Image 1 (tube, rainbow, N blue to C red):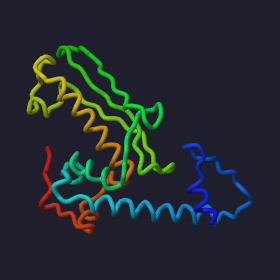
Image 2 (image 1 turned 120 degrees about the vertical axis):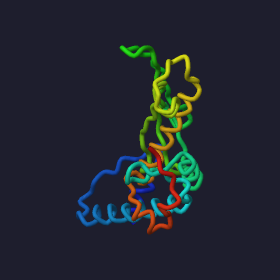
Image 3 (image 1 turned 45 degrees about the vertical axis):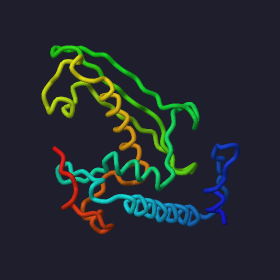
Length: 193
């Protein structure tokens, strides 16, 4: 049918522009309703890959951690790549900065993430980390030379992966009630500061 043709229309790896016809608006609505059902199935399928240990609690809000993000990626066939095509590496930058507290640096990773080569399910995301991040010094400020640069870079990459997965799969903004309905218990989740 027309909805399946719109979803599967591809040519040379690029989505083919669909030229609107005089189709009645209910066809567009049917497409959107089908899409909404598919997205709910993606959320359920992704959550089923996780358990309570894959979720952290920030205040009252659950957030998927890197272990959960990696499981979801495997389960959904998610891949990531840079902006120069689907086989290009992620972009990353290091910025050295200085202010009244001294010298510090940041790493940023940017790229795209896609579910199983779907032309509809692609997001752009970034991950960022600083040599001043609390996890490196238990909340204490440290000089840039006191922090392992590889740890900053790894944290930025981790943030990229988690941010992209939760955005791509619809797991961003989940509630504990919704997760409990899918079998994830707050009692076993890690509470973060």
